[in-house]
Length: 289
Image (cartoon, rainbow, N blue to C red; front, side, top):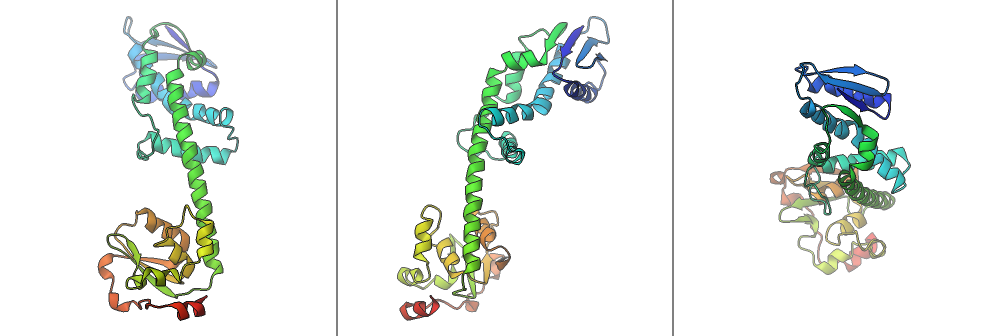
């Protein structure tokens, strides 16, 4: 008989719930105490180690992993706010599922399941006493390093996202405070995204529309070919022609201008509806300022 000692009755209940679903053929019988379970094979002499090991791996991944990462957030990185913790852990889960595999510094090999399995295979799970708390404290250093790596990377992603959102909000506020220099512009996505009204204008003429002071205040973030003129023009309407709505710059334009943007498929663009910005804008730009 194997006795498993849990940290609290909630963990005991969680393990029991997993056992009901994963031991569908009922190879084991379980006697429940307040914070412990007694497990034995239903058939005399039958090995239970494989079943128990599988249950424990699921238990650590599904019931303890989030708790463990939250502890790292609180105690190592001092993120105490529950909402911040939730957002960072959401990023961590996306990383673990492989949804954010382009982020540098992530260690995915070997899988977390293998790290847990390797440690559990060094312990007899047929009989005796197995303490969840002791196992987590003394045997999971490699697993903990993996979780810490996820947390570290997720914190960096969270900070970058916060910085991006603050930047986007500053651009929104700026656009809302501006008088439009052009009521409507067309942004067309071909080899790159471009303001079609500027297609035949020289670089010098295009710069007449850009608020250079605002660009100087945001030198690392403002794209001088697209975002800077769009924000400086502050148009009431942007017709955006693209078939790649997931493109980062397309999403940035939508995030800044929100309801002012309407997206169309590229084939619907008609150049004859565009009023091009003429060359030699010195006098016109003075009127627009």
